[in-house]
Length: 309
View 1 (cartoon, rainbow, N blue to C red):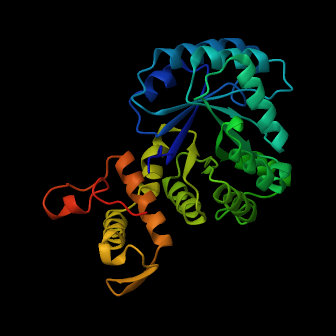
View 2: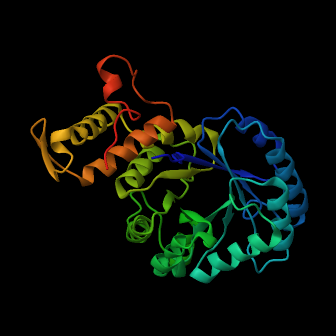
View 3: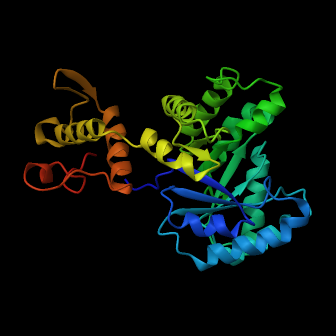
């Protein structure tokens, strides 16, 4: 199993050259160059050129690069598509995806604009319709033509649209977040939690990251570099979880256990479903460079040595 870690996903205004340069040294897993919410109408053209220049210049050391474009019903959409062709980011993030048609229409527009096939599609889930249609929207990921690979929760917009109150614990949002997580898991799509607005409140950020992790989120969007470290820590598998994943994979890999559905391991009942969980844990650890030293006895339990069908 190979995957891209998406623990920390940092938003940057497309017009902010200083932020683009600084981001080359940041530990965020993914960077979103924003052409939409953070850019005033009179700044759209400059932001688009600045973002394209930065992405094209590179230097982001393997981080996932995402370009958030404006909606299809805006005057900037066609120029944004041309920017995607020129910059060739890893993915395009579209705002306010509210129906399956929004996904498929954008995918069609990307294809007709000449955007390379490897450029994926991310979708902002930030309207009541997006929550109500989460299953049908994310179901489009089954069609390779959709390019869809990630859903991003737009929590600030959801609070506004639902006329809710955003309090510690996000009680008003949890049902909506959980519904979207369920749809993402059902259709093999990664899902990223929304931003935490008070970038000076590290305790609050950590609590919200923990909540998102408990709900099943793959990571969190961020608005300030100071939020990256705490976010990465929460969404990184701890050492004991990684060690347990190795044990599960090694146990089910033994010849006597290959056909078994349930095992006893260190006094715990372990099912074959835990194999998939263990594989993902090891894949994340590998992607972020957190695997233990693979020598001696550990080498027999390394990802390259373990194969569980």
